[in-house]
Image (cartoon, rainbow, N blue to C red):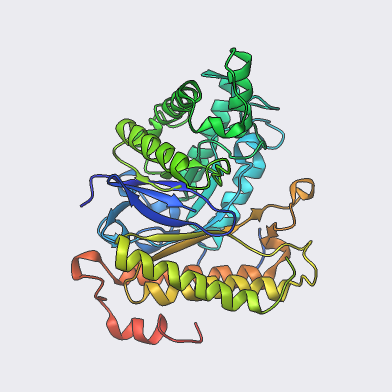
Length: 407
């Protein structure tokens, strides 16, 4: 069993890929009616009633070879992206949106949510200045983590943004300049020792945080599936990539020193996009299997309603393409470890829609698609185990259900 049980993630704009670095996994790169399953799912045991799951059954996700496992059972990531949870939870009048989106996600079998554990120097800032926090906003993040656990959804928590939204890399540079540093580029975030120390202090503050709702330290909480070092990292001033890789190596080791229990993870529409998506995913799954021996998660995929030629049928086709490619790897015990849809919204948040929002109550075809995919993964997870080398306890049932093209 790998000693490292969580993953760092470094996301690319469309999809993300895991690779191993220094022994640590890093990622590169309602109510509506539905038909396919009970709304109660387990991330490790298949379908269940949430009320029946005891805390001692809520264990860390681990890695073994190129697979994620929980309790010696396969764990395939079936998730979504919702970056705004902490900010909404910071206001009592909007906190209910957090519960609402988790409830809807859980109802269709989604098990992992990617969200931000940062807001630097801006409106409702978590970190008002280096290592100075707004306790009320931190309590809002506590609520997000506790509410996720309530609905049996695991979290990938991103620790800083590459872009200036919610502060990010540019805010750290502003803090450095205010402290008298001679900085000429935002990319000095990756190289200047003072800015690196600011980031490390933030990481330490989050990882060692004791949740005020659950009294569990973040680094000990199985609800947190992964730490993402940075959202969409870029260091354009160094095309060689050496500066960014040096930063990743240092920060991955640093976070692992604080938390050894979790894994480390980091436009015109046409049908050509579907073929490209399949080819791109299959190539990265193959690389992960042949060269890295690690699981791969594909994240931030979707179709914008603002794109020329948008229609909901194409959006469903893209989602189906990603799901099918992951399942083709899943049924062979391959490195395709799951996916994270961009992005899930409850009703009444149109002002924050970037064009990619999926409101399940208004999207019955997409709801059914997600629900069916969740059912497939739940069945697979309940029938297979690592101990039998991904052999299935009920092989005939799997051949009938999981391998059937109609599913």
